[in-house]
Image (cartoon, rainbow, N blue to C red; front, side):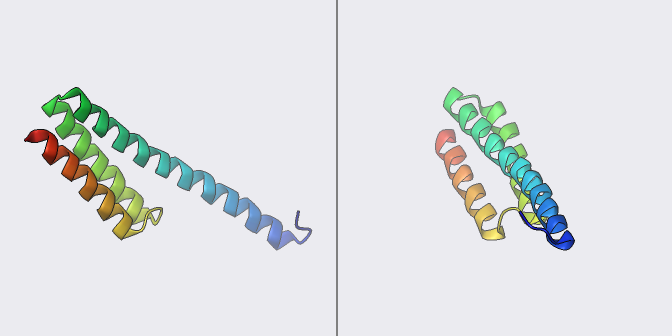
Length: 88
């Protein structure tokens, strides 16, 4: 545990950032999971809604810097491939 005041503040800020980033990552995982569950259920309308929501959440995470832009693009691409495969 740091004794220097500035280091203590840095640790507190790191903890706050970690908590915020964890919430965003969790929302990304949840959105992807809900889309995949809708695909499994076979409901086209639910898939469209869930996919749009997931894309929005992933883009938001990338904009905030929680996910790298290429990581976000890869996640969206893989999800889109699953949605397109389900539609066939």
